[in-house]
Image (cartoon, rainbow, N blue to C red; front, side, top):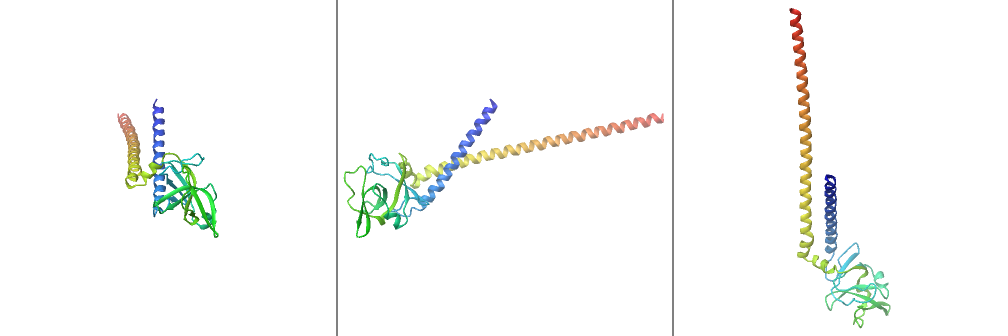
Length: 232
Protein backbone atom coordinates (compact mmCIF):
# COMPACT_ATOMS: atom_id res chain seq x y z
CA UNK A 1 0.00 0.00 0.00
CA UNK A 2 2.83 2.37 0.89
CA UNK A 3 4.62 1.55 -2.37
CA UNK A 4 1.46 2.30 -4.39
CA UNK A 5 1.17 5.64 -2.60
CA UNK A 6 4.79 6.50 -3.47
CA UNK A 7 4.27 5.49 -7.12
CA UNK A 8 1.11 7.61 -7.32
CA UNK A 9 3.00 10.63 -5.97
CA UNK A 10 5.76 10.10 -8.54
CA UNK A 11 3.24 9.84 -11.39
CA UNK A 12 1.44 12.96 -10.16
CA UNK A 13 4.71 14.86 -9.93
CA UNK A 14 5.79 13.81 -13.44
CA UNK A 15 2.35 14.78 -14.80
CA UNK A 16 2.44 18.24 -13.21
CA UNK A 17 6.02 18.80 -14.38
CA UNK A 18 5.12 17.78 -17.93
CA UNK A 19 2.13 20.13 -17.99
CA UNK A 20 4.18 22.96 -16.53
CA UNK A 21 7.06 22.68 -18.99
CA UNK A 22 4.69 22.17 -21.95
CA UNK A 23 2.82 25.30 -20.90
CA UNK A 24 6.09 27.19 -20.49
CA UNK A 25 7.32 26.17 -23.95
CA UNK A 26 3.95 27.07 -25.49
CA UNK A 27 3.99 30.46 -23.77
CA UNK A 28 7.51 31.23 -25.03
CA UNK A 29 6.70 30.15 -28.61
CA UNK A 30 3.36 31.94 -28.56
CA UNK A 31 5.02 35.11 -27.26
CA UNK A 32 7.68 35.01 -29.98
CA UNK A 33 5.02 34.40 -32.64
CA UNK A 34 2.96 37.37 -31.49
CA UNK A 35 6.05 39.58 -31.21
CA UNK A 36 6.41 39.15 -34.98
CA UNK A 37 2.82 40.32 -35.46
CA UNK A 38 3.76 43.94 -36.11
CA UNK A 39 0.68 44.98 -38.10
CA UNK A 40 -2.92 44.00 -38.82
CA UNK A 41 -1.90 42.79 -42.30
CA UNK A 42 0.55 40.24 -40.89
CA UNK A 43 0.23 36.69 -39.57
CA UNK A 44 1.52 35.56 -36.17
CA UNK A 45 4.32 33.18 -37.01
CA UNK A 46 7.55 31.61 -35.85
CA UNK A 47 10.20 30.59 -38.39
CA UNK A 48 7.67 31.02 -41.19
CA UNK A 49 5.01 28.82 -39.60
CA UNK A 50 1.97 30.63 -38.31
CA UNK A 51 -1.74 30.49 -37.58
CA UNK A 52 -4.92 32.44 -38.11
CA UNK A 53 -8.25 32.22 -36.35
CA UNK A 54 -11.33 31.68 -38.51
CA UNK A 55 -13.81 34.48 -37.82
CA UNK A 56 -16.43 33.88 -40.55
CA UNK A 57 -18.13 30.90 -42.20
CA UNK A 58 -17.00 31.74 -45.75
CA UNK A 59 -14.86 28.56 -45.95
CA UNK A 60 -17.45 26.23 -44.41
CA UNK A 61 -17.70 23.76 -47.27
CA UNK A 62 -17.58 20.09 -48.19
CA UNK A 63 -13.93 19.95 -49.21
CA UNK A 64 -11.51 17.93 -47.09
CA UNK A 65 -9.61 21.09 -46.14
CA UNK A 66 -12.67 23.33 -45.62
CA UNK A 67 -12.95 24.94 -42.21
CA UNK A 68 -15.50 26.76 -40.06
CA UNK A 69 -15.82 29.59 -37.56
CA UNK A 70 -13.57 29.23 -34.49
CA UNK A 71 -11.25 26.71 -36.19
CA UNK A 72 -7.52 27.37 -36.01
CA UNK A 73 -5.83 27.35 -39.43
CA UNK A 74 -2.09 26.76 -39.77
CA UNK A 75 -0.25 28.52 -42.58
CA UNK A 76 3.19 28.84 -44.10
CA UNK A 77 4.22 32.43 -44.73
CA UNK A 78 5.50 33.27 -48.21
CA UNK A 79 8.44 35.65 -48.11
CA UNK A 80 9.48 35.94 -51.75
CA UNK A 81 7.84 36.80 -55.08
CA UNK A 82 8.60 33.43 -56.63
CA UNK A 83 6.71 31.45 -53.99
CA UNK A 84 3.75 33.85 -54.17
CA UNK A 85 3.54 33.56 -57.97
CA UNK A 86 3.76 29.76 -58.12
CA UNK A 87 0.55 28.85 -56.30
CA UNK A 88 -2.03 26.62 -57.94
CA UNK A 89 -5.77 26.32 -58.28
CA UNK A 90 -7.12 24.66 -55.14
CA UNK A 91 -4.52 26.18 -52.80
CA UNK A 92 -5.92 28.10 -49.84
CA UNK A 93 -4.22 31.44 -49.24
CA UNK A 94 -4.30 34.17 -46.62
CA UNK A 95 -4.24 37.79 -47.75
CA UNK A 96 -5.07 41.24 -46.40
CA UNK A 97 -8.28 42.89 -47.61
CA UNK A 98 -8.19 46.71 -47.23
CA UNK A 99 -11.99 46.83 -47.59
CA UNK A 100 -12.53 45.01 -44.30
CA UNK A 101 -9.11 45.94 -42.87
CA UNK A 102 -8.44 42.35 -41.95
CA UNK A 103 -7.13 39.01 -43.13
CA UNK A 104 -9.07 36.69 -45.44
CA UNK A 105 -8.31 33.03 -46.06
CA UNK A 106 -9.94 31.76 -49.26
CA UNK A 107 -9.33 29.14 -51.93
CA UNK A 108 -7.75 29.89 -55.31
CA UNK A 109 -10.28 28.90 -58.00
CA UNK A 110 -8.39 30.28 -60.99
CA UNK A 111 -4.91 31.52 -61.90
CA UNK A 112 -5.00 34.56 -64.21
CA UNK A 113 -2.11 36.00 -66.25
CA UNK A 114 -2.52 39.68 -67.00
CA UNK A 115 0.31 41.15 -69.08
CA UNK A 116 2.77 38.70 -67.61
CA UNK A 117 1.68 39.32 -64.04
CA UNK A 118 0.06 36.58 -61.94
CA UNK A 119 -3.33 37.20 -60.30
CA UNK A 120 -5.54 34.78 -58.44
CA UNK A 121 -9.30 34.48 -58.43
CA UNK A 122 -10.29 33.50 -54.91
CA UNK A 123 -13.51 32.23 -53.38
CA UNK A 124 -14.81 31.00 -50.06
CA UNK A 125 -16.07 27.41 -50.16
CA UNK A 126 -19.41 28.53 -48.68
CA UNK A 127 -19.84 31.46 -51.06
CA UNK A 128 -21.91 31.18 -54.23
CA UNK A 129 -19.66 33.54 -56.19
CA UNK A 130 -15.97 34.35 -56.38
CA UNK A 131 -14.44 37.33 -54.59
CA UNK A 132 -15.10 40.63 -56.36
CA UNK A 133 -11.48 41.59 -56.98
CA UNK A 134 -8.62 39.56 -58.37
CA UNK A 135 -5.81 38.98 -55.90
CA UNK A 136 -2.39 40.23 -56.96
CA UNK A 137 0.10 37.48 -56.16
CA UNK A 138 2.29 40.08 -54.42
CA UNK A 139 -0.39 40.50 -51.75
CA UNK A 140 -0.51 36.84 -50.73
CA UNK A 141 0.78 36.51 -47.18
CA UNK A 142 0.61 32.77 -46.52
CA UNK A 143 -0.64 29.42 -47.78
CA UNK A 144 -2.76 26.92 -45.82
CA UNK A 145 -1.05 23.86 -44.34
CA UNK A 146 -3.53 22.43 -41.81
CA UNK A 147 -6.13 23.08 -39.12
CA UNK A 148 -7.44 22.21 -35.66
CA UNK A 149 -11.16 22.33 -35.05
CA UNK A 150 -12.84 24.61 -32.50
CA UNK A 151 -9.85 26.14 -30.69
CA UNK A 152 -9.48 29.33 -32.70
CA UNK A 153 -11.72 31.29 -30.34
CA UNK A 154 -9.50 30.34 -27.40
CA UNK A 155 -6.35 31.34 -29.29
CA UNK A 156 -7.98 34.63 -30.27
CA UNK A 157 -8.76 35.27 -26.61
CA UNK A 158 -5.21 34.37 -25.59
CA UNK A 159 -3.90 36.96 -28.04
CA UNK A 160 -5.59 39.72 -26.02
CA UNK A 161 -3.77 41.16 -22.96
CA UNK A 162 -6.42 39.86 -20.54
CA UNK A 163 -6.53 36.46 -22.21
CA UNK A 164 -2.75 36.15 -22.17
CA UNK A 165 -2.79 36.96 -18.46
CA UNK A 166 -5.66 34.58 -17.69
CA UNK A 167 -4.67 31.58 -19.80
CA UNK A 168 -0.87 31.74 -19.70
CA UNK A 169 0.63 34.05 -17.07
CA UNK A 170 -1.60 33.06 -14.13
CA UNK A 171 -1.44 29.26 -14.77
CA UNK A 172 2.34 29.53 -15.22
CA UNK A 173 2.63 31.46 -11.96
CA UNK A 174 0.54 28.82 -10.16
CA UNK A 175 2.70 26.01 -11.53
CA UNK A 176 5.87 27.90 -10.59
CA UNK A 177 4.59 28.38 -7.04
CA UNK A 178 3.68 24.70 -6.89
CA UNK A 179 7.12 23.73 -8.15
CA UNK A 180 8.69 26.10 -5.60
CA UNK A 181 6.75 24.46 -2.76
CA UNK A 182 7.79 21.00 -3.94
CA UNK A 183 11.42 22.15 -4.22
CA UNK A 184 11.32 23.66 -0.73
CA UNK A 185 9.88 20.42 0.69
CA UNK A 186 12.57 18.39 -1.05
CA UNK A 187 15.32 20.70 0.25
CA UNK A 188 13.90 20.47 3.77
CA UNK A 189 13.65 16.68 3.51
CA UNK A 190 17.26 16.44 2.30
CA UNK A 191 18.43 18.77 5.09
CA UNK A 192 16.50 16.74 7.64
CA UNK A 193 18.04 13.50 6.37
CA UNK A 194 21.51 15.05 6.51
CA UNK A 195 20.94 16.27 10.09
CA UNK A 196 19.57 12.90 11.16
CA UNK A 197 22.54 11.12 9.55
CA UNK A 198 24.97 13.55 11.18
CA UNK A 199 23.26 13.17 14.59
CA UNK A 200 23.29 9.38 14.29
CA UNK A 201 27.00 9.41 13.38
CA UNK A 202 27.84 11.75 16.26
CA UNK A 203 25.84 9.57 18.63
CA UNK A 204 27.65 6.47 17.38
CA UNK A 205 31.03 8.20 17.74
CA UNK A 206 30.13 9.35 21.29
CA UNK A 207 29.05 5.85 22.28
CA UNK A 208 32.25 4.47 20.81
CA UNK A 209 34.38 6.97 22.74
CA UNK A 210 32.45 6.15 25.91
CA UNK A 211 33.09 2.45 25.44
CA UNK A 212 36.76 3.17 24.85
CA UNK A 213 36.90 5.25 28.04
CA UNK A 214 35.14 2.47 29.95
CA UNK A 215 37.60 -0.07 28.63
CA UNK A 216 40.51 2.18 29.51
CA UNK A 217 39.16 2.70 33.04
CA UNK A 218 38.61 -1.06 33.44
CA UNK A 219 42.19 -1.75 32.44
CA UNK A 220 43.46 0.88 34.84
CA UNK A 221 41.42 -0.60 37.68
CA UNK A 222 42.73 -4.07 36.90
CA UNK A 223 46.28 -2.74 36.89
CA UNK A 224 45.73 -1.09 40.27
CA UNK A 225 44.26 -4.29 41.68
CA UNK A 226 47.23 -6.28 40.42
CA UNK A 227 49.67 -3.85 42.03
CA UNK A 228 47.81 -4.04 45.33
CA UNK A 229 47.82 -7.82 45.21
CA UNK A 230 51.57 -7.95 44.65
CA UNK A 231 52.26 -5.50 47.49
CA UNK A 232 50.35 -7.73 49.94
